[in-house]
Structure formats: C-alpha cells, structure tokens
Image 1 (cartoon, rainbow, N blue to C red):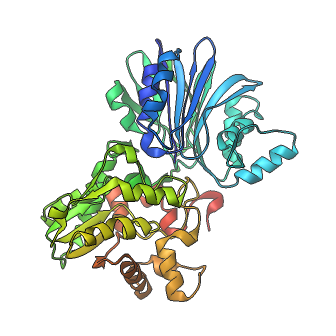
Image 2 (image 1 turned 180 degrees about the vertical axis):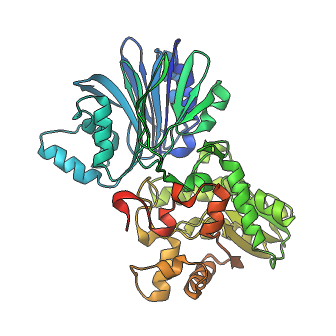
Image 3 (image 1 turned 135 degrees about the horizontal axis):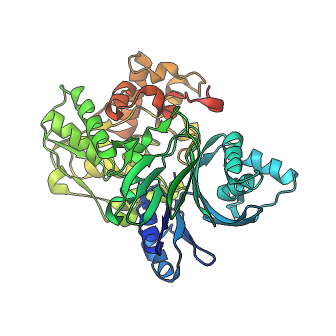
Length: 470
C-alpha cells in the first residue's frame, strides 16, 4: 500500500507538503515523490529503498515553490507522473493495486496509446491511470472511467491548474481524509499526517467520491456511495497507530485485539507479555491489560530506519530487515515463559527464523504466539503485499495436511473445525513455538467496531464485493 498527501494554501505550501508526505513513510519502501504547482509544475522523485524520505528530499523542498502540491510514498512505481493532456497539464499520484493492469495496458496500446514510464519491465501503474483519465471528456469523467475499468483499488490525487482533484476508490478499500489548517487545506491517506502540521480532520471521503480542493477549500464534484469495504488490515498492521480510519483509532483497535486474545487464554501460564515491534506492541498491551500479566520488551527495534519487513518487494530484503531490526535482551528473555503478540502470520518465515529463534537462543522457556488476526488464506487483491497463495503459512500447512493444494478451504477458515485445529498445530510445529492461537474473525470484527459488511475481509475469507467475488 502506498501513501499519498496533497495540500493547497493561500501561501507557499512546500514545507507542509514535505512533512505531510513524510508522515506516510510507513506505507512504502521503494520511491518517494513530490510535485508542486507554482508558476510551473515542478516534481522530484527519488528511490527511498536504502534511505529515508526526509534525507532524500530535504534539499529539494528548499528549492521548490508553489501554493499547491501532492506527494507519494510508493510501494512499487515511481510517482508523481506529469502529463500534458487535453485538459491541460497535471501531475498525479495513486495508492492501491490494479489486478487487471496488464490487460488494460494491452488494450490501450492496441488503440494507439503509448507508455514512457516502466517499472521492472511493467507499465507504471500511475501512468496507466493518467492515460485512462485522459480519455474522459473532462477530469471527473476520466476518473469515473478509471473506476469502471479497473479490478482492484485506486485512490488518487491529481494536481491541475485549478486545484487538487481527490478521489477515493469506489469500494473504499483505501482511505482518503480531508483536513483544514490556517489558510490551507490538505488531503491524506493517514490522519496521523495532520496532527503536527496544524490541520484538523473535517471529512472522511466516501467510496467513489470525487472532490476538488483549492485555496478556497473543498468542492464536491461527485458524491460517494454508502457501500464501503475498507481494508481491515489497516487497523491490524498496515496503518500508523495514531491514525483513524472511518473515525476509529488504530491503537485502540489493536488494544482491543489483544484483550480478545487474552480472554481465550485462561489456561496459559506466562511470566510476561511482549509484542513484536512495532505493530505488535499495542496488541500486546491490550493482552497484558486483560490478562493482568506484565508487559515487557524482550525484543526492541533498532531505530525506525530499518522500516517494515512486510512491505519490501523481495523476500531477500524482507529477511534482511527482519534479521537486523530486532535486538533481543537476554536478561528479560532467559528462563521466562513468554506470550508473544504479533499483528499477523503471513509467510511465517520471519517469525520462525528471526524472532522466535532469537527468543529461543536467549533462553526463553516457553513461547506462546498470539496473532491479532485469523490465518491469512488469500493473497490481497487490492494492495501490493502477498501475491500468491503458495507463500502463505496457512496454505503451506493445508498443502502438507492434504498432500496438495485444494480449491475449497472453507473448512480451514472455520475455527471450530477439527481441520482448522490441525492446521494451527502444523503451523505451531513449523514455527517451533509452545502454543499458537489465532484471533477469530468474529473477535477481530468486534475489535474494529464496524459492521462486517463495511470491512474488506478478503485475505481471510476469500469473499469481497463486485467483480472479484468468488
């Protein structure tokens, strides 16, 4: 998942744009970019795979001038994209994942459209969106055409001469939030971007809603719809703890997840509760509050600079980050029975090889792992994360138990079945942990606090709205 930020102001906006974009750094590891509209359009893009956004863009933002701008922290493609169109010049940033990107690109190529931006041999997603928009009768109809053509998700910010067009994807998988400052207006993926730069949240965009933001404020160009399927994983792992989605705070949801986990653990004898830094900490705090067991930190993360081990695109880089970022404290670990709260078990390799192993090597007597969400069964179809069934830990377990992959895994999704229990036991043995208990889907939904039909649960259930429904 990428993060996007935009700002318009009656004064120069570039410093606000710089910090607002930087506050999305937890959402991507590949590229950062900013575009500003002053007398002309000016943009900068840098790789942030080996360094932080701030260090790459500090000199740039000092030289950029303008009262409107957009920025992105990207998980895959270089952006913003600049385009001269029949609507005038514009820059655009996007967040989401387009499952039928290659199919759309082939159709556009056959119709005479060309592409200049390539990422690892593939068409740049943001350029593809820009080319679709350019086929509309105006910018709004072009964005509507995007929503009609794509399978997956796409929220976007488009910087034009008249202001910033903002559009949240039509199912609402990815968030966009509008906020007001002093003589300035901003829109962002994460509400946590607003707190320290003087903005107050005014509106959560509805799915499919399109608005125009300029120095006069916000004008709705297309109303949204009530149907919502926001990504539940935002609260469990992806989102920043201080962010709110649909008005619900992430840190509090994670604490509630931990409380639900503890309520099912009355038989566990443990000396301390811990969380895998950083995203597992709030889950562990909730567990500790409910269980009355002490919260301690046997594993600490060495500086934010190591980033997140889930978001990088290659397994090699994910493993390297997982190895280097966590430092174990022998004096807290040795001889203790530890409840280890984790946001999720996706592939399982990092937890097994770089987390549990560190605890065992430093003398942990027992390790009881408690993920805050159910076993992931399906690769995400709306954000760039897991891409194949084969890499998921739960599917590896099912493959081992069944002798091959199976199409219908419903019996393994239901936590009351014997096959579900066998799957969890297999994963526990593979991880070399004392016990393993996953959060149930029902408790996770209760922890979030939205109705089930307002949440995307695809990666756990395989069910979602629209064209992707199974």
